[in-house]
Amino acid sequence: MLAAGFQEPLSQHEIHLGKPYERTIPDFFYPGEDDDPGVCLYLDGLSRHLHGNPETAAKDKAITAELASQRYLVLRIAATELCDKGAMTVHFRRLAEHLIGKEKADQLKADGSWFGAEKKDDRRSGD
Image 1 (cartoon, helix red, strand yellow):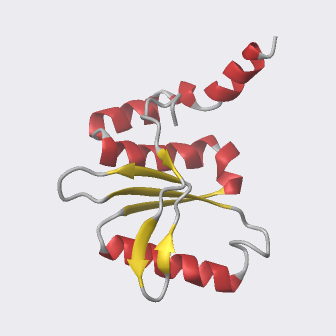
Image 2: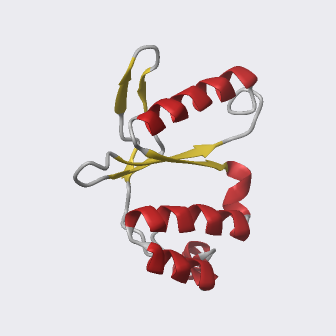
């Protein structure tokens, strides 16, 4: 996200929902301004005991619907999409449109140099 030009998000930010779920903790969160509550980003593993489980998937869907009803933007990124430039471009474009405008979103789509940039930087720092 940083390589793509986004500010550093809050990590593990708790959001109170009330009953029946009480709370949710997105992996990453961008607070909103004025009447915008913010952006919740969830990284979803797909193993059977996590988000591949129908019960967990149903709960996630209900929490996403509740957050949307409260006007949060919710992005759920499957773990398998993290290595997929096309999928991440779609997610980051949507995030950019919400946080920093359509022009920046279009730039992210046109210039994918941000994808994998952190991995390249990590390899250099290990030398």
